[in-house]
Every structure is written in C-alpha cells, then in structure tokens.
Length: 378
Ligand SMILES: Cc1cc2nc3c(=O)[nH]c(=O)nc-3n(C[C@H](O)[C@H](O)[C@H](O)COP(=O)(O)OP(=O)(O)OC[C@H]3O[C@@H](n4cnc5c(N)ncnc54)[C@H](O)[C@@H]3O)c2cc1C
Image (cartoon, rainbow, N blue to C red; front, side, top):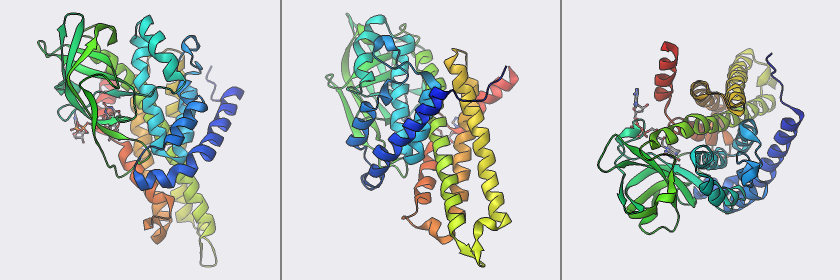
C-alpha cells in the first residue's frame, strides 16, 4: 500500500516549524543578508525549539522524530531563509556519523549536548584538492601511541566557525587508500577555523576553512573502524546531506512560487492582474509541476530513510531534481517581477542568489547524475 498523506503529528509539526520560521527566523533575515553572518539569536531559538534534537535518539536526549520531521523542519526554515535552513541541515549531517557509526561512549559523550544545541556540529570532507573527488583530499592522520596526529586544511565547510564538534575525514599518512573519520573539537590544540567565505547567497549560514596543525586527537575520537572512514563520511552525505539539501531546495521553491503568485495577483497591466495572462499562468504551472514532483521525490526518500531502507540513490534523484528546480523557480519568479525582479527590495533577488549556492553543496548535479547513471545501469 502507498500512503501519500502526512500523519496528524507531522501536520502539527509542520505548523509549529512554520510558525517558528516566521516568528524567529524571518525577522533576522535582513541582518543576515547584510552581514553575511549566522544570527546568534536564530541559533539560540533553534536550540530552544529543539530543532537540533530531531534526529537524535531519545536515549541520548534527542526527540527521535526521524528524517521526515527533519525534512519538514529544513523545508519550513528554508522557505524563510535558505541560509538558516542550511545551517540546520548541516548540523544533522555533522552528527549523523556519531549516530550511525559512533561508539556507545561517543554517543553518551556528545549527543546530549548536541541535542540541546549547547554544542553545534558540522562535517569536514572537502579540500581544495578533493570536492567531487573526496579521495583527493590531502589531510592526513598518523598513529602516535594512543593518539592520532591530524594535519591538513579543509574548505567550504558549513558551520566552520560556529561548530564545536566537527566530524573530519583524513587519509592515512602511510596508506593513501585508507581514510578515517575523527571527531574534532573546538579548542583542541592545533585546530582552528581560519578564513570565512563571503558567499553570494545563503548568507545566513557560515562557510569557511579549517586548519589542523599536528592536532593530537585521542583514539576515542575515531568514528567507526580505522581505515573505513570514507564509508562513514559518504553514508552521512549521501542520505542526510543530500536529504537536507532537498529540504533547502523545496523551501526555496515554495517561497519562489508564493512570491510569484502574490506579485502576479497584485501587478495590474492592461487593466487586470497579470495572473490572468495565460503566459504567466503557464510559468506558474511550470513552477507548481516542479514543486509537486520535488515534494514526492524528497518525502519518498525520507520515508524510506525512516524505515531504515537504503535511500541514497533516491536522495541523489531528489537532490538533483529539487536543486535544479529551485534554480528554475527563482529565475521564473524573478522574470514574473519584470524590472522589480532586479531590485534588492524584492525577495526574489535573494532567492536567485540562494538558488545558485544550492548546486554544489553535498555534491554537484554532475555528480548526482554519475550516481543516478550507475543506479540505472545496476
Ligand atoms: C555553500 C556550500 C556549503 C558546503 N558545505 C560543505 C560542508 O559542510 N562540508 C564539506 O565537506 N563540504 C562542503 N561543501 C563542499 C561541496 O561538497 C563541494 O563544493 C562539492 O562537492 C564540489 O566540489 P568542488 O567545489 O571542489 O568542485 P569540483 O569537484 O572541483 O568540481 C568542478 C566541476 O567539475 C564537475 N565534475 C567533477 N567531477 C565530475 C565527474 N565525475 N563528472 C562530471 N563532472 C564532474 C563538477 O560538477 C563541477 O562542475 C560546501 C559547498 C558549498 C558551496
């Protein structure tokens, strides 16, 4: 049986997430756009609203609501601010390796504080030599007694400057085919957040570089099995990272459609609203078709994830479709605004900039097609 309806709890959760986004995030959007910085108030409000606890099991202080709830939350926050949605989405991505591959001690040590939002999380894979090709990273680890020594630099890391717990991929100094994932903690000697990017869009989240200089990490911080860290990182990115980007993209699609409909109903030409023009209705129909398809793809994958089924291929399709559709939606929404679509006072200009930044995060559209092509051939 296929059931396409949300449960009553999920509907109530969406209502609460929407109210949260409209009352706590929306007022901070102008400031985040202006400064290009995360709003501390938004982070605090997210923690108070237990947004960070959604995917963390109850046993470790979380809400254990799962991935449909998480998709709803990221979608609703992103409808108001894709930057804030991105911050929230990468938070869940950063803790996923601990939830899925961490030891009992790691779960007990880190998850309760993360669930309360007292600690913030991220994941650091990308380097200048390894984005689409993560095996190209140059950060290394080597064993030293009971510790590991980590050296290297990461770039384009979301939450780089606000995260306290960063799951980090590095390669064995002596075996370039072996990768391991470590929990790096703010304040460790030799670990610092360095350059902060000034992005064209998603300005409400922080993206930057990290440096590890002979950073000593106890063996207790190794996540999963030594040498099998690539699987840990890619599993988290494939399901939770891409799932989160789907939430960001869906939220943006909804925002674009609502802005386009509002403008089309208010703009009078030839003595009537332009929404009565069939050409405009066709454009709105294109946006609506993309949105309906994206919702089905995204929530199908999240439903599979909640059932514990493999869903990374489904998320690759959903990520490809929704992020491309969000770019189309932002372009159409701006077009419908005519000359006003070029003016900063109109949110559609922000939507255009945000839509552009959705592409590379958690893997480019080219990489999604590589994955989907392999799936088609399997
Ligand atoms: C806003 C933002 C937030 C991010 N957050 C994080 C984060 O929190 N943690 C993290 O680790 N990383 C993060 N990233 C990095 C992101 O994952 C990478 O940008 C992405 O994987 C692409 O890598 P790259 O930028 O090095 O591009 P490259 O890999 O250099 O790609 C360049 C071009 O080549 C194409 N290409 C590459 N390989 C293939 C192929 N096999 N077939 C066809 N075309 C190909 C790409 O599609 C692209 O067009 C973030 C990026 C952005 C923009």
